Length: 314
Image 1 (tube, rainbow, N blue to C red):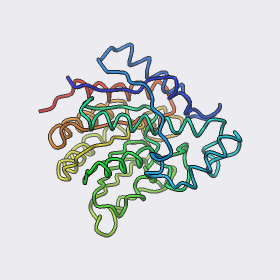
Image 2: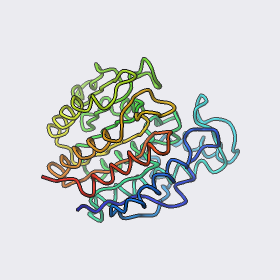
Image 3: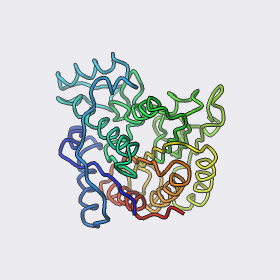
Image 4: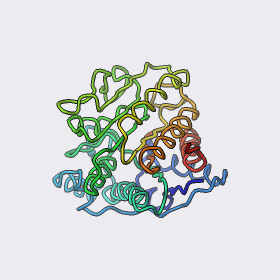
């Protein structure tokens, strides 16, 4: 069995937009309840808050200042209308980022084998702006941290229903950041990006994979996706794996149009867990991402943690 740290604590619930916004703390509370009920052997860790220096590994200082002002005022929007400001939004976003980085640090130090932050995976934020419910981009911060630690090859896998544009386009020319992104076709869903012809630019051509799916597709595609993911992951031989496992691709999600079950998350986690133990000493951290049906989030995310704990490493 592997040691898996899962972030749990009231501080993490602060990243919750005012009702009736779909990104709220109910998703995370339901996940923690499911995890506790199944008693699968995870280790709970407290949320951590990132400081400004950490944020600025990825975020522009001007954007951090903009969020600070909006956080004090407590009204308006941080983007074109998807991401509302509220009093304390800066601190809430710092906790989301800091908790992801805490998982990464624990895995890097050997204190844990794997990590899971249910409020991580904020993949739409750009260096200079918020977008799509994402104030800051914890994934970008984590990647930049790993680079500072001397890592040359990081694999980012994203199975959220939305394309991870904030990560993809920041690292589109970076040959050391490998991306495998499965999402609903951008012709039908925000942010409208992630065409299969986009495979990286310049020296990074071939380091990125986009798999857009049509509305209504689901578990029947697992048999096509998994072999491609495994082949890509083994071939690129990463030193660290980050999995964004948004649950908004599951059936009955109020925003997404895909029809997966939690089997999808379980299979992807099992596959990446094995690959991580083969090529990078098991270094993998998963992040909750989207998902707006709390029961879907609970089942999908718990299945990821279960695979990380008990999945095979052969």
